[in-house]
Length: 433
Length: 186
Image 1 (cartoon, rainbow over the protein chains, first blue to last red):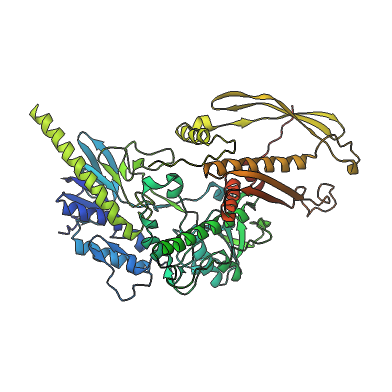
Image 2: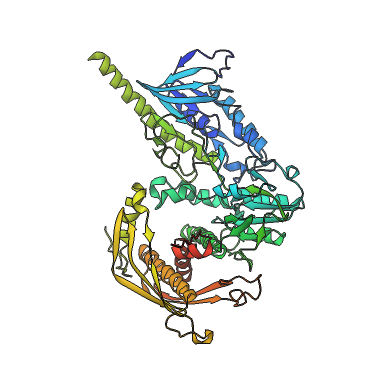
């Protein structure tokens, strides 16, 4: 069922019911349910299947979720290390194998250039051919572009800058000090790796999420899974905007260290500072809010651990696993706003680990909000027949995880099938009248 | 069955605040406020600052009455001590902002406050403002805020109140992050 792209077919137009943009785990999960509902569709992929996992990840990256949790509709992890964490290459293999298994109609090396409205649906043009369709599923991901703060413009010219999307390994860096900006999983992992490679490292820390790798003898993701935290729906949270923007937790896909947190970095000689608040005359200015963001992260972590303890209590197994414990609070340095002159040669590289944003430059439909994100209700776009998937907390807390794709895809494709049936009836009645 | 919620009253109209949040996220222009103060020099280090009008919700607004703040320096600085020092007013601003935030967050989290007392300290080395040592800054070398709070809540919940208040505080942000200041002369 896999269709090979036809080179030189630039002008040929195809008609289908649904165009899915992006052949990552989300797009493939949507395709699975569309196939099951016998809905004609194609998946357009700018590169190869799981493209961003092939090209846009640093070398040492591993998933933050254990292998046993990685599954897609009708397809689970079959390897022999269920408690290990996949490397980017292994994720590529997992997703590509899934695409073959599912017989997904993927058109690889087909880069979407424009999506616009037509009289009865959508027109999708690519660098190869164009498609008309009645529904579009945007599954191109949340992490296409680095979200670099405007303060980057004030970094002196002699200091190299790169983003987590450009970063592969420490060999890329000039000798000398590195300022890592951002304290999510990305920032901490890169700070740790660069420090191990012998650089002096400073990490600027704003709001963050601290979690232990495991608790009471089980992986923290196991707890989030079994207690239902990951299944929490988007309609059930107080502040959805906030929930969708929570940075990724300070974790690393490894069973070799209990924490990948600020204490871990401090112990290894990484200097911790407040959030990078500004750069004036080449001098970096750090926020004095470090002790509060650390207190918030510790409080939040302890609330989760208490919720786990209470859950076990309620289930009648308070002695499950190892005893309940509370971890050392984050140690906040005496000086969280050190004088750091970016002109004096101490810092040679600034590494922006400040998050990502989606690229919708090809989307020519008035559905973007003032921040440039698609307006949607749980993935049902603000334009009828337009859907978006694979974004953080799209429909559930697990939405952006590989194993989170299935439930969202099932519900969105059900909605989409309803929309197609409705628009069919409408066009039939138009013809009849 | 509907259960009656224990009535928590910290004197904060949370519904109005949440309503404003919703309304202003739909109308971001109305969220643009300008706060103002005017200051007259009286004599020596004594000045009087008045706040009366501000701009917000798309139009000019007025305080119920004009508020006056006298600032001066203490007698150990050979001044007449006719008001708090300006740096103490900064502490007052921080304390007022954080404490208001605690009341609002507590109301929103259904926590009854019985008493909230903040004690603030800002350390300063006068070698900075006196120009004795160029390595010493003029301002505080740090601010310590201590809260004693009596409320119907666990220790952790009270700590979370105080943390959330800092997270949402304007003055905490103004003090902990750099702000552009432009001074002009007519």
